[in-house]
Amino acid sequence: MKQAFAAAVFVISSIAATAAFAQEAANSASGEVMQKCKYPVRPEIPNGRTATEDEMIGTQRSLKDYLSQGDGYLACLDRISQGWGETTTEEQKAVIVIFHNRMVDEMQATADLFNQAVRAFKGKRGS
Image 1: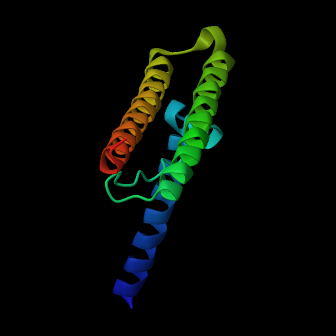
Image 2: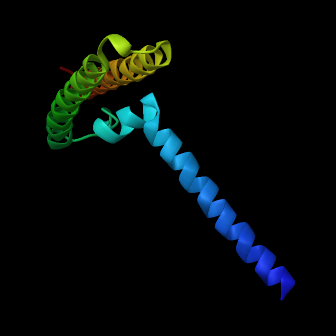
């Protein structure tokens, strides 16, 4: 009986600690970014050597949508940064730079991967 009570107290303590951690994360700069800015889902890029023309066209549309959403994400970061105003801390500045660079790098890498797939697609057709 005592063991069951001790286990229940441990579980309740763990839940309280997790909730406190979640609240602290939400109050942090990165927590604010994650709550306010929707990070876009990167599209799957097909293998250009095996993809059909319809797959490549569909991927091109998905890529354009993804890049547009990425631009929206970057704009959201700017709005958050501007909202902090002159009281922006070094931690907040660093968080914005990290999130910004991650998005830009991922957008560039995804576009590069698509361009490679297009070259492979054209190569298999002899274009």
